[in-house]
Length: 234
Length: 234
DNA sequence: ACATAAGGATCGTTGAACGATCTCACAATA
DNA sequence: TATTGTGAGATCGTTCAACGATCCTTATGT
Image (cartoon, rainbow over all chains, first blue to last red; front, side, top):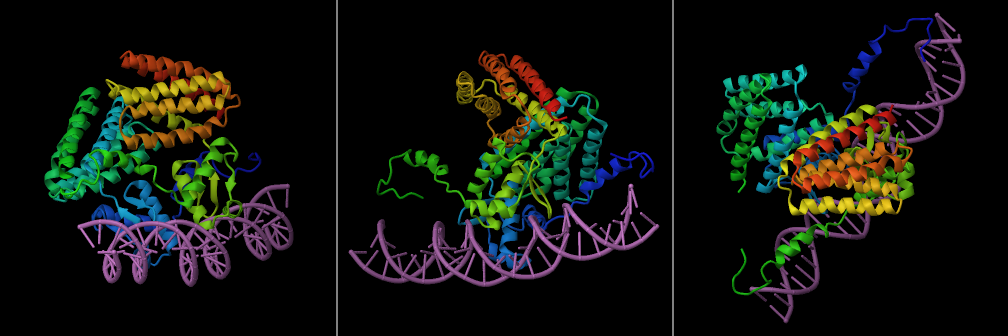
């Protein structure tokens, strides 16, 4: 109910401000703790299977057990930690079955996202191109873990073509879990590098409008990656 | 490393027992509290938008604030509660945009699940048939909320055709959120009853091997439901 | 060799406490 | 009258200390 007498703000300004509302979202201590641990886990600092003691980590980070438990709860829901009642939390150790499950999901969701996105939005294409470009730069600099990260961003971008924030969120979790399985690969370069070119190809097919072709290529991409990872987890 | 000298258990018994392992999984207080609240929320006892006070609910349930907060955290991740820093948790209030997002996800995932499941496993078909049968019984007894529940189980079963436990879990959350939007429908019978027959038809098409037909029918099913819900959320 | 019991470590949960933040009503101001 | 400032009260975020319950390990006994 805005009054008509005085002009308070030009029309549209409030809407534009509303978009910034998320930036303003402060974070609780528990979330910051979770961010730190997430970093260390995906970095491989804690080996899969390691137990994360409430006491030792709590004292190290100078947070109370309660706060730490909230952080653990967050990471458990992301699949990075496994919580066992009365035993504590452990860095998730993925089995070959887990890898199969994850790739079954990826095949279904990523292929469907490509199929449903005809034509792809300009914003969606920009995300794909950006990921490919980033991966290329990282490869030039021989930073193979960064190549892997950028490759994952490419697949995140594929899912974003579907335009569902909930699906995006789910994919984020799936990729976080996959990161755990990447830790098992001895040679990051041999594992990540080849997929760069394949992502480039997929992007090209999408841009040219050949959706079925892109889907086929993606399918074989995922099958190959799954095979490698399953082998490493046996 | 099993010793060969003494036979401890007949072969296969350990595997059968292993399946019961989940039943043995005790639950923490926080999880039980979450289960109670989940029930009340999906039942509509707490209206969307209501703030859930830590103090009042904690004293009512006789659990400490810390435990209650863990339960809140669980339900927040399920999308049933919305947590706002320093303001507390609120029963999620879905917008029309949320409904659109949820149905975009459902279209993509459910249709893809049907497409990928050729031929469908016998176990998968059993789940579908069971859901349809349950819905039929509930309809005969004029229990329309139960019809809605069974219909949702049907769609859960569709996703289970894909054979990914992670996808199943995601669908569980999506349907839990959808339940919130169902609360906005004034007339449960008018909303739920028509979909029973359509689910029956979809099942028949799947059984007859007409996957594309099933997909088309499902697509229109979801489009109609979305339209009704979006209208109710405007 | 196996079952049992004891001890220590860790988790689950509670209750109290204090500072920080939000909300709302009320007064001050233009 | 409409906006801005102020303060009190309520609630949240976080910490701390404590105790029972559960798990793991080790020692003990048969």
